[in-house]
Structure formats: structure tokens, C-alpha cells
Amino acid sequence: IYEVCFVKDQIALNVYKIFVSDENSKVIKKVEIRLTEKETQQQFGKYKSNRISGKLIIISEPNKEYEVEIEANGYETLKTQINLDKEQQLTFKLIKKDE
Image (cartoon, rainbow, N blue to C red; front, side, top):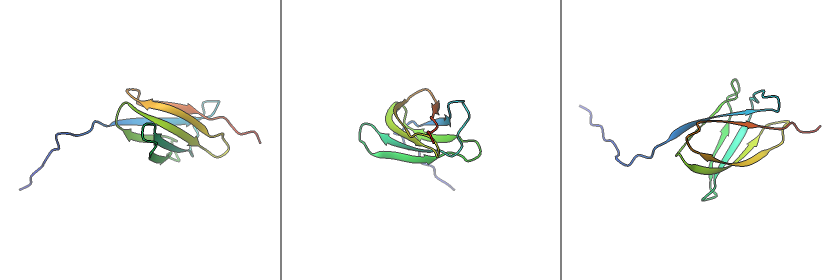
């Protein structure tokens, strides 16, 4: 016999898909993203993209604001702010570094 207990005050979480591409809309497959909660300035997470698809998945409470830092070899680092709300697929573009 098993007993299951459900927590009444569960926090709603959303799944967000993130793609990072270059100026020509080609997906960059090796990307690292750092999220910092804007309100508390605490690091929320550090994510690496899937090496085959380039996709990243982030799970977060809805309506959270984050500072985002995106890095990839050969590209300029992108720093921006996002509000994770109803839009559950985000795309960012990185600019190639001048060599």
C-alpha cells in the first residue's frame, strides 16, 4: 500500500526554450547562458546548450525578471534583461567577433 501526499502550495513553473543564432540566423550550437535574478542579484542558473540542436531549456516561475549573459566562442558576449512571461520560446542573436 502506498500513500501519496500532494503539496497544496505548489509554485507554478514554465518551461522556456532558448535558441541562440548568429547574424545570418544560423543556430550557434555551443552556447553558455548565465541568468541572474534582477530583484535579488543572485545567480539563478548556468546553462549549456545541446551540442547537436543548440537548444537550451530553462524552467522558471512565470513573470520573473533576469539579467542574461550569453557567451559563445568567436562571438561577442551578449548582456541583456528579460522577463520570462507567457512567451515560452526566446531567440537571441550574437555578433561575430572581429578577428
